Length: 300
Image (cartoon, rainbow, N blue to C red; front, top):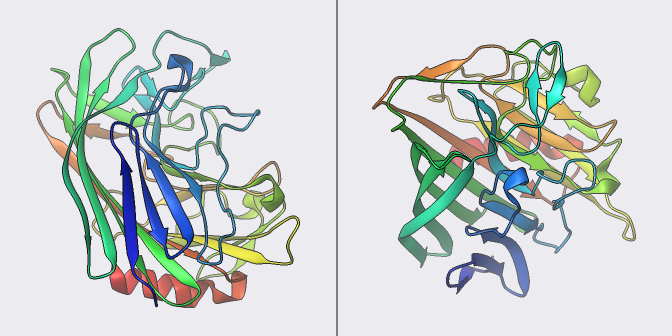
């Protein structure tokens, strides 16, 4: 296997490379409009064979951006983007679209064939108030000739001056819409793809809201005769583990281990909460998901 290296476009993004293939670009200082709750994101994301497995700013939800940490209900603030769900009114556009603002890097390292990026962020409300601070670490390593792995670790500290309850549209009253957390949006071609877990497989309508330690999405590409697999593993130490999953396949492709799906998580003032995830990305199909999940779990 080749070794990973990186290129830093200072002030903007870090690109991680596998030989001649750009596996992903991490944009840590985006130029997103305020309405889209500006946040760092990973896009484009590719398999080792170079096949694209992410989508940026789709017309149906312009705040969806590859893989990003997106939270729709942080107290009364929206760090997801777009309108906020209000029970009885459906979605209402408010002046509450906050920003995840990069402060500085504490580590950018490429050693022994793997890559590790750590930085600090400030979560600022649209009104300009400091709400959360974050320490985030993103890592990447090769797993096999067909697969690589992303790790995503975050520690969120409440600096708002009062307790903060993190929830979802479901905790606010919308049935089976518990999205929020580490969120992946797949290519248009993946629409109609197959979701898979250790217990079985099906569509987004079949699987959404179920609890699993891991879930994968197998999708077929346009233009090329190939299938790719994106799989997320929830760390056993994460709050509300195993999570309920927010997933779609009929309308579009998305995958999200949603720790606040049905129950809010309150961060007391001055306290912190931690989450850790492994993401496997492979030139593979649904039947390969258990082996990929095992490899990611072992490395995580």
